[in-house]
Image (cartoon, rainbow, N blue to C red):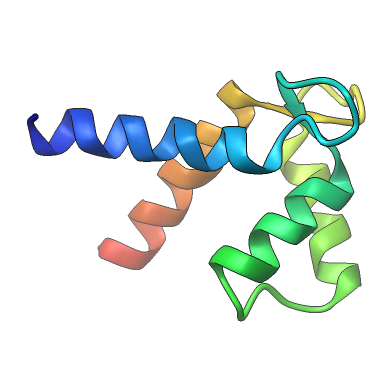
Length: 83
């Protein structure tokens, strides 16, 4: 399996691990995203920062983060961390 395919598979698996605990497997709530940030990025920041971060990710302002919004987050994070 190529590195790109592995990265895409890991990205989807990470989303799936945290999404859906509220019943909707296709989205992450603020609580689910907060849990993911705490577990995956221990320097995730205080609650106020998580709230602001969630608001930035929730592009369509529907109160949840879908996979497309999540991918946008990871892409931006990769650009910031790897540049």
